[in-house]
Length: 354
Image (cartoon, rainbow, N blue to C red; front, side, top):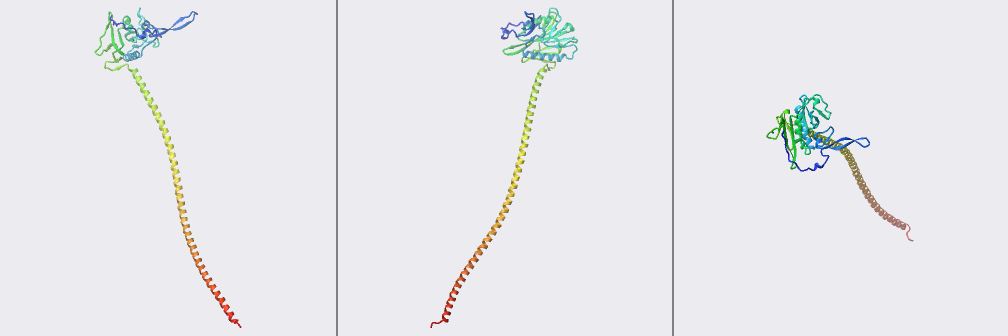
């Protein structure tokens, strides 16, 4: 069997964390006879041979790659009768001496009816056969994928074992694809194409990497397994649409409020116009009254001037009459005086001195 030997690396900070692999709950009998559930950390051996309901820690990049892988595999076999794709499901291979594993992805064929809610898939019970298994390495369990699983997967009868060796080098995530085809004496490493991709013949799929992420394509180069990313993009698009709708509703509310304010302003303008029209009417009426009063005043002034003229004429006549009266009085006094003189002359003549 071919193996890949890696140099031992220095201890990483996460290696001091006993819970780095995850945990499981076990029942523990107490001194008083009661049974209590206790949380215990998983070990690297527990990850190699998991139990149902183990809580296994994975990093987001690993989960993303596993999602892409399962969706891509399923898209290639979903129409094949009796073929299933399992991810992180405990698989009992039905081989003596080989404990159950939990591959990141495994394709099985010849599967009859089975309960997908079960935590373990028993190959012997379903008379199923493994087609291929894929493991995507994580820093804490990389040794299992590159080491002991190579031997155990071969013994379990897995004809094609693919390792996506994901590592972080100088802060950048890198990937290499290692394909192992079963032979009579063990696994033989399969060649990659010029782009570092591996052709998975049983499912008609190219397996490669771009910018530190797993990429699956069909024979024509169409990318597969991006449904999750599409859903995320669709969710983001829906969020943008909802935001746009909310903004549109807000704008509509603002427009309704603006229309209401405009209608109120229009009513106020109309009322003001009515007030202006009334003021103009009152001003015109006042102007008419003023013109009438002016006409009446002019008439009164003419009458006054006439009266003054008449009064002045009457005064002039009175003065003339007064003057004539004075003349007549003077004349009368002169006549009286003459009369007295004549009377005196007459009496004198009637009574001459003796």
